[in-house]
Image 1: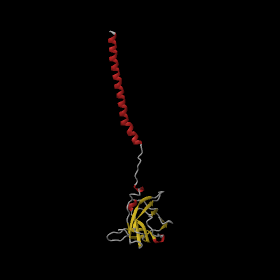
Image 2 (image 1 turned 90 degrees about the horizontal axis):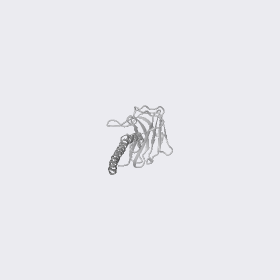
Image 3 (image 1 turned 180 degrees about the vertical axis):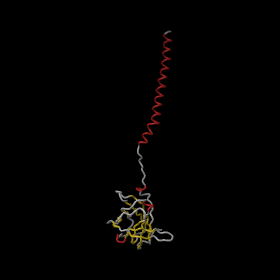
Image 4 (image 1 turned 90 degrees about the vertical axis):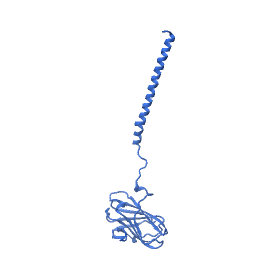
Amino acid sequence: MTSLQRLRSLGRRGLRSGACLAAVAATGLSLLAGSALTSGTPARAQSTPSIWQYTWGNDRNSLRELYHYVSDTQPQKRAEYYLLVEPKDRGRNGILKLRIEVPKTFDAALDPKRMKFCVMQKGGMTKRTGCKEVIPATIEVSADGRRIEVIPETPVSGKPTVGLYMNVFNPSAAFHKFTVESQAPGMPIPSLVGQWTIQIGVG
């Protein structure tokens, strides 16, 4: 074999060897990429905790509307308020304490002596909303008039419809949104129940 022939033979072997190496390298890269796509990414996604965890009870922008009745909705008129919390609103939880947030728009004097905590009758076509039975309770109004706390002497079971009765002079014309929280026996903090939207002199 001449020198020229030996050089040509070596060149062909080198090309074949290089092609094999390139093919092996390409296959290895493809396998690595496939492994990253099929196993690594989902494992990381599953181990990442969810950022948003929605809890209705803490969302004050989408509160459950609760039933209420006001005997007179004209501003500055004396009226009877019945603010009801039904079993469906609080589930089966008993009531150790109710905390009612009074809106700043409600510029009426609140006197705990004119309030009662009651087992309520919800009105309908043939009956009126009213206080069926007074539940012994301590009722306190904060100094700024923005909060009412109702603490029954004995925790109330989850069965009856209960509520706060108030006798007040109506405030200025507006939509007044009261929110209420209920603390159940054995629970360290209260949970949000819903809101009463009271319309005075509007519409």
